[in-house]
Image (cartoon, rainbow, N blue to C red; front, side, top):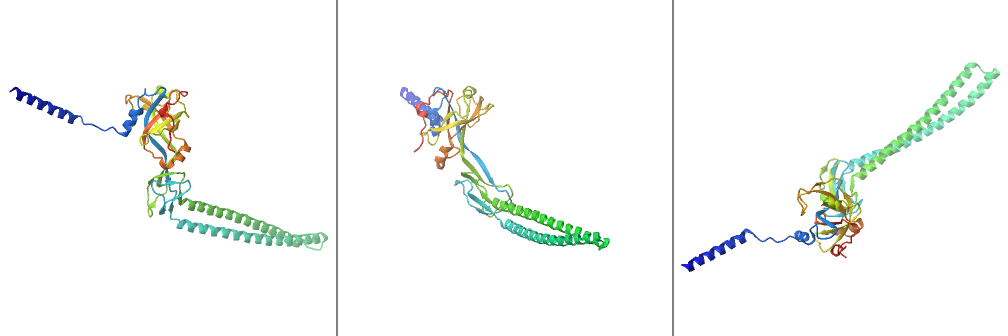
Length: 339
């Protein structure tokens, strides 16, 4: 009887242990949790504060100025394109036709100017004859050999010749204005033609390709979204006592989840003037409701240019700042970059 009781008690104990074991399953620690465990904690380093965040980059929408049908979409998602590189083209046949018509208008205006210049020469010749005739008749009239009516006719002929010359010169000015206007139309259409070729506004990576060849797009439609790889940063959130000593351009350090063996230099480029509640995406050891200030840590441009192929946004990591600008960086926060 005692043996049976002990066996039952042992079985119940083993069953209870199994239930407890099943109720508290083991969970593998993620790589980011390991990073937080390794570097986290506000008392980890003297005069050093840290917070987690994600790498971000400035995004730019590459849009079309004019409506039309896409004939080519050259760039693909993930491509790194240089500033000014052709990314897409819109059908330009209508604009080409308008440009040809504007060029023809320029030629017509120049021909009109040549006609006006010939009219000026003719009017100048007629004026010269009228002036000579007027002088001769005026002298004859003074000597009593020509009637006053003849002098009046010579005077009217002179005035008519002067008016004709003025009119011919005005036609030249009008032709010059027509040439300027038509040349301005040519320049405008050349600009429009160039705008139908969509170019990269900056050097960066294509994040989204939003349209394909053959699609008709409206004016102002975005064709691509690009990331400016020269503006990569991490926003971290720190409490008021930590932010107080910080200043723009202070040194900072970043350690990223995928490559925790490297320490990346950065600079404080922005400190929020107003506090906010801690964002949900930020893991801190303080209370979630505590007010914090956003601090922007930007990676140097020359470093981004050197490693542009390896730059990836959205990567989680830790950002570190010094609460004492004169304090040395600890050994495991010394700059360490891939060769």
